[in-house]
Length: 158
Length: 158
DNA sequence: GCAAATTCATTCGTATGCAAATGATATCAA
DNA sequence: TTGATATCATTTGCATACGAATGAATTTGC
Image 1 (tube, rainbow over the protein chains, first blue to last red):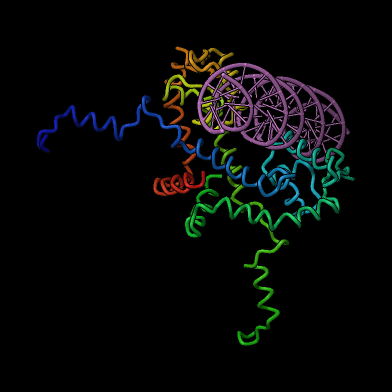
Image 2: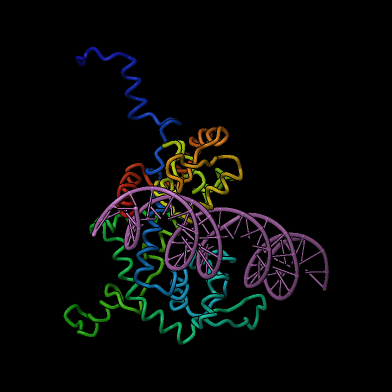
């Protein structure tokens, strides 16, 4: 078949197969949501391999408390991107393990203040270097330059 | 303070503050895992705004079944990156809603085959164009060029 | 100063997500 | 053939994650 003999039919066929998105050709594996979910799964798995006794949200909670000091549960939730119901569960479990302690706000009686215990503080400080390794390993498939670009774009998306 | 009067002390101070990562300076908000979790949250929220009656994993399940046809639960799980326990729950709920149906594998009696019902097929085909919008909206903070780069790098990570 | 609106925390229900243990079946190897 | 392995599905237990409803306390608006 010579180049000049391409029919309109052929052209349409090519468009449908190679370019035009239609409902018969939805590639799940190429959708950003699907890959985002997988990337997140991989990170959680790397995290668990390095830090077995704490989940990423639990560590995030401790790290943020270490950073900002005593805060209310709600305030903490917004700092680590967890809604009130989720944060409560995380705090409850950290409290049960003696890593954080709770107290009532003197002025605003609605608020429940959260703070690190001495044990909690020790734990965070011990784990922060490991957390750096986790970040590194998560980004390991990318070169330093790629990683920098990726982080910039990912931050725009989040 | 002249340029020639910078002490070793000053230099160390500058390094600590601006470059040297140490355990007193861990920025949770800049860690890839944290941002990945937030980006994923944002995507799920966009998804829910467009498709209220299905979760992303449920839709992924239907879309993949639409793509590959009847498969075993385990096979399906590996195609959509869900472990056996998770896939079972998703399938159970889709089955309860009449979107998929189950049958026994004739030869290998361990396997449970999953397939779309007519209703399930209708649902996927109706939703695929909306899923495209969801992908678009998720990537909206990026230019077309940025989005292409991001997807390439994200795929490397996942 | 007081009613309306808001904020904070809790609870309930539902849905992933995964590790570990179990039982049924299939495959492999000696 | 049969005993050891491997695979498939299920179940249990635990940990996010979030919508919606609720109650207590505070702030706002008039």
